Amino acid sequence: MEGELKNFIKVWITAILCLSYCHYTVSRLIPKGWLRLISLLPVFYLFISMPLNLHSFHLCALTTFFLVWLGLFKLLLFSFGLGPLSPPPPSVFHFISIACLPIKIKQKSPPKSLPNPRTTQNPKKSVNPIGQRVTKVLPNKSILLAVKALVLGVVIRTYEYKPRLHPYVILVLCCCHVYLGVEIVLFLCAAPARAIFEFELEHQFNEPYLSTSLQDFWGKRWNLMVTKILRPTVYDPIRYMCARIVGARWARLLAIMSTFVVSGLMHEVIYYYLTRVQPTWEVTRFFVLQGACMVVEVEMKKSATVTWLLHPAISGLLTLVFLAVTANWLFFPQLLRNGVDIKALGEYEIMVDFVKSNLPHYQSR
Image 1 (tube, rainbow, N blue to C red):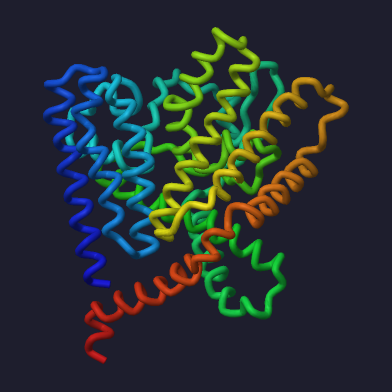
Image 2 (tube, helix red, strand yellow; image 1 turned 90 degrees about the horizontal axis):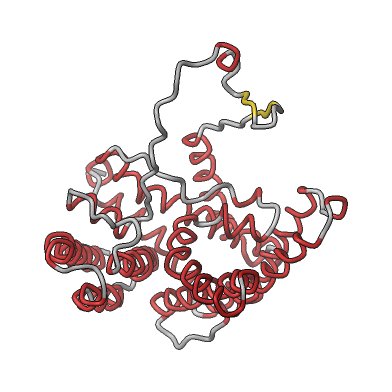
């Protein structure tokens, strides 16, 4: 564990030095365009190669996601003066945080006029543009996150009874583990930036279990940082280029499919770092299938009348069942075959033992 932590620290020191070079040298001396892109190629190479020095599931997964996906895509946009790094933040610490962490600074809304007594009597009520009163749900995010962390702990402990559980129960556990684990880890990674720099950050997840369709799940609820980085790097350019050739409608559908293909390939890359085995392309097929079904869903919504639309409760249940079944078919098998789940669960115990061995209370026993 200590050796792995040393490698982890070395990797991130190198990453910080690379991003400092991007901030102090590239952003100030090299104009945006192909010349800036060429100047960033050494950084791209280091970002791609450095996670190979890590063998821990959690440390490698985080580093790969932050550097190989978020970092590379944001720097690619930065090369052409686009994305969250353009214009470059004045502080190098802001630049580094935005470049590799799953955060996006939320734009502060303009100051509002004096409150209307009629609207301040009940802060949970608001009026929409057509005059209908709407009730807003204002959950306490901290309490909700604590509940999710508790549920994640229960899920992890339940794995001990895996041989006795029905395959469908195991599938539900895997889905909950992936969702809760990713959301909590990304929140914890973004928390220092919120605390140190007082960023007002956008949420990475928006309660995906409340999704009513594939479009709602992938576009508005699941891992929103990935959605927002794929839109300017893949969706918008493909839609713009194809619109001139095949028209706006087909360009939109091609852009959706292209975005899911790129997402599948990036997941394939992450799987390679975690398993170090030759890709089987199952996870790519999973995202291609999701994209194709989402294209069909979008077209059906346009052609269907209001009376033929499913109730949100029914469509939501069908969406979650479809995601779980296809994930069991194509998303999880490569991880399970290579024992990544066992490795991840074993690391929880190693991390707990490592923390205990370094706490004075346990050392004195």
